[in-house]
Amino acid sequence: MKIAITHEWFVTHAGSEKVVEQMLAVYPEADLFSLVDFLAADHRDFIHQKSVQTSFIQQLPFAKTHFRQYLPLMPMAVEQFDMSAYEVIISSSHAVAKGIISNPDQLHISYVHTPMRYAWDLQHQYLSQAGLTHGFKGGLTRLILHYLRLWDQLSANRVDHFVANSHYIARRIQKCYRRSAQVIYPPVDIHRFQPQSDREPFYLSVARFVPYKRVDLIVQAFNQLGLPLVVIGDGPMGEQIRAIARPNIKLLGKQPDAIVEDYMQRCQAFVFAAQEDFGITVVEAQAAGAPVIAFARGGATETVIEGKTGVFFIEQTVTALVDAVQRFQKTLGNFSPELSRHQAEQFSIERFRKEFETFTDQAWLSFSQGNDIEY
Image (cartoon, rainbow, N blue to C red):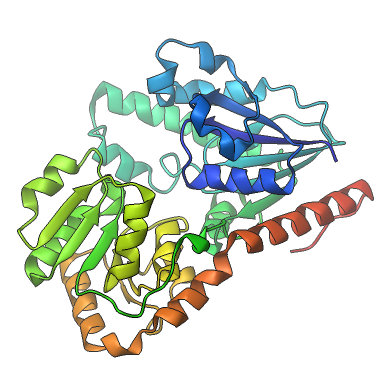
């Protein structure tokens, strides 16, 4: 198979890029396409120092720092890639990467991290948080999002097989595109962590300080509980979070991986309040032996076992989170670092490589024989 991998943008090495990294581990000869590529020379190891074919957005003014502002141009940009030389196209998509144009003799598999959240079910939340519910800018943004929804659904017809990173995302794919999806959980580097039995009496949160992560909710709950909480992360809500945190809460800002690993291996429990597509940090915490206190929506419900590797709260409210922490403390002896680690092992890098390669190879075999695969 001659393979191309498309991705929205290469600017960091975060969750979706780690999926591309493992796709390349399976298919190292694949060529890479992306709307923009601003990776520094010393941060390209995860793509094997490969060159990336980029779109015209790469050359637009201020693209390096404000490429997201060109979102309305991205559907057209991704359609300009000439993919005619490839037999198999794999798109790693959370926005427009799945929209490449292929021909009937090419197999297109799209690994979807999420349909565009801001264009579909979370539109109203995003508009509210951005202060765009009224006025000319708000109306223009709604018009752009309307156009993106139409294109997003239309471009879904160009995909032969969808792969979702969780059952939650598979349901969103069904809702937005009316298409079924195979679930292959993303790769988590669980080998970074060594679970410890002796836990220290503090709770931990690791997240970007953006509205949907609900770090503010975690801080408010621990303000009320008075229990020690360590928060690692930073972002646009940093000033707001620092203003409300009481002395029992230690804000460490952004920290290197080694520090995060150390705190995960020592904390009494990891606290997660977001409705996330999958939630890699939830799995990482369990790999470090930490039980998880998580919001009972999204991907966390597929990676945490209630009463065995964690505790859920069903509403994103201070009261619900406080109650969950108190329930956790009453049953603290029920949680085993070994069981948490065993749960995390189901989401390893090795498991992802095996499942993705098997699915892709079977899809190509069936496609080349003129058959469909069932999943």
